[in-house]
Image (cartoon, rainbow, N blue to C red):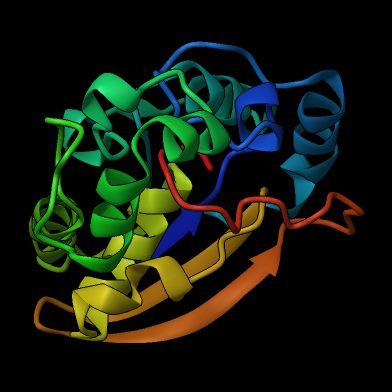
Length: 204
């Protein structure tokens, strides 16, 4: 039995462009929505479609023409009291806390969720998908893509921030529970969107 999990990152949004810790609200920007619509025909066939909670994954899935189920286990990293703030704002107000969070995967100075906890949560979902035959297409936040790759390849959690996930790209994992192969992210369609999801944070 072989499972395929295709992780699609959401289209661009103001929060993404502003390097803002995502709070689950806020729509896609018009250019992001247009690119998602244009990419709909390039989606591979899937046996089931799921998505992260939050407005931009919901809108991306809709623009891609997907009838998807929202799964709480695919929620983006909970940034606690940093939600809604930009990386620059947090760095100015809490520089030591921000540095600790970026360097220690078990740290959660924002009183939210640590990177380690996120990787474990997403990893548990991925292992459950590894018991299913066929193909799952998941529209998920960039942090969920990173966490899935860290788990699938048994990478050290410190590598989490070194994985770039541009908007509207596909990262494919294939295999079965306990053993996964990675096909590196590719754009759904020709896209000139800057790869500006390189900054850390929920939606950053």
